[in-house]
Length: 204
Image (tube, rainbow, N blue to C red; front, side):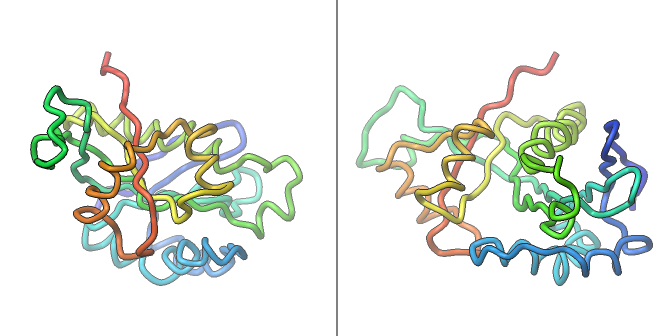
């Protein structure tokens, strides 16, 4: 397994999760909000198994000076749907959807134990997303076609969905298409989660 992938910033370093070096450190990872509990459970109980089997690739973000885990994210290959096609026959869903190669942002979490100790860590989730998630995807796009980044918000409405749309830059599908989408594509973390997506810029 490749374990030397690394993305650095003046304050943080992002590396692939490794059972050799990280397995005990994730015990300190904390998310107190009930809607985010599955993220804490994932990094502690499932991420190492998924890393080994190839279901997900998880990246830990650590503070360069203290080596504390600041956050993490997980990516997996997938396919996504785009409703922006000429055929608008609402009675034929297969004609509405145009299948595109995509990457799923399956998990993104910030360690509250880290944030409590660092006053300058506000907005860390958005920083990880813009600095490290996009860096990993940019590397991936050198080898395979990826046109869309997508994920699932555990909130249909509210602060988390607002952040996805206004801070992260995701979009939602039209309501009627979104409903059909959820009948075909939805993770097992929450029956009420909502599909969000963004198109990626052209590869230079």
